Image (cartoon, rainbow, N blue to C red; front, side):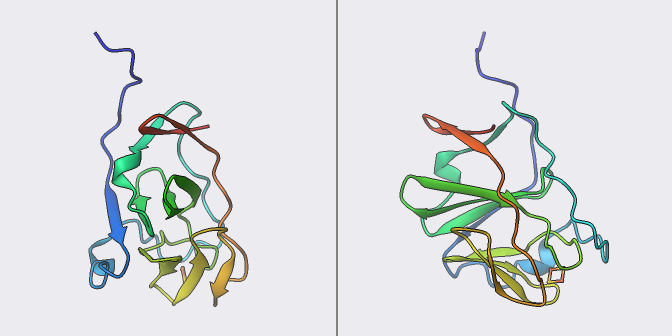
Length: 139
Ligand code: FES
């Protein structure tokens, strides 16, 4: 018997630094044009990932939950909506300190979610997380 919360299998894509080139086309979640960003789909207490799944200087995109988790520096985890603020597609990569959306070329800070390059005009909203030991939970 386990006291761990149930874990939902999910599509997840891990990005280590510059190793994500070419994977954008493999990503799902490209809704193609909604202008209203969808809210992340995780309830407080849901287990999102193990800390070991989020590389330092990279990130993990949880396509099902529409959340991107980054670890800009060791032990410092950040989470944002993975729904691009341009046209609502799921962001496609984390390249070092930048979250990329290859659909139209927007980029966001992996530290703050702020826009680094358009056409997106607003930041990726932060998602509250709770790191408990080696687990990252929705808060
Ligand atoms: S949806 Fe257009 S750049 Fe992301």
